[in-house]
Length: 458
Image (cartoon, rainbow, N blue to C red; front, side):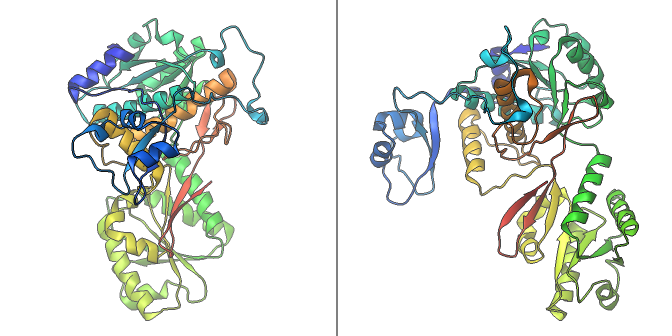
């Protein structure tokens, strides 16, 4: 089923809310966090706009009894006559140097984007991808305000869809960029189509794509488990050089983390780096023997589950209470981010590092802005999921569409060329031989003893 931009907006509205405003054009210049004693009149005056212009950008201000409160986020519109600055290519980025302008150069026209994902309300895949698509629309809206035009089409490509039939739509061949598919079994047909028509394909979630090694038009965001583990192991060995590693067997027969811990141990043995092994069921005395009293310790569990993590914290708390000079750091898994609400104090106390391909800081102003914009446009909150799908769609679409606008066909997604810092998902693509491009970004989310959260990007 093919859905154009306007028709898909109506489709989503019918599924979710009767009066949803899809990709609403809200001509705001920035978001402003209200400070103590600020007034509507004062904010308008400071930003060179009228009170009425400020209220038009923030319709809730027109409601009876509205009061401006400290900590609120409000939209600041552009003053009349001031247009958003156009995005232009930077001349000092040699890696993406633009060629002579061609007759149909996408840098001089609207970027044509196709979205081929399950866009329905039937199951979790559909609901997650609808939210992802909403993030794409929000990115298009933000880019439009900065002078970047986007012509977008969307197709509902669910798990049972024969994508080869979808690709017969005449609008598909006109795309500069296709975002999709979700399912690996659909990659081959889309890859062949993209090669034939010279279309770039952004695979937002698919991790099994052998076509990546031969098709230079493909961009894969997430690495498969083997590649990801190898990358994390390399970064672990770099980050924790000079630490004594303690591997803790958690007796979790369902865990698949042994692939990571076994690989890490083999690499350490090859490098001549010592480590210890202990067990959650060990006595306090035997558990303590695995730790070094002269070197900082980094603890690695072989499960990502919460119950075992809680037991490990209890044993380590007892250990450090009896050995107050002992230094202990924990190295975790992406799942641990779901347990932050209950374990934050322990994360800070034990200098926890969590490897991930994404991270959303719930306290950042960027996160607050996009959550507010999402709520304003779609009249509901984002799903509480990892990753946040609307933010994923926003980051990926903004990065790629802006990159195509700046560099056209020469865009490769290399580090630093777009000038955009993603809210959640770092993007740093490298070419795989003569084939396509793989996102190589890995980050460690670090909970510091100073009660701060930082991201270490590699």
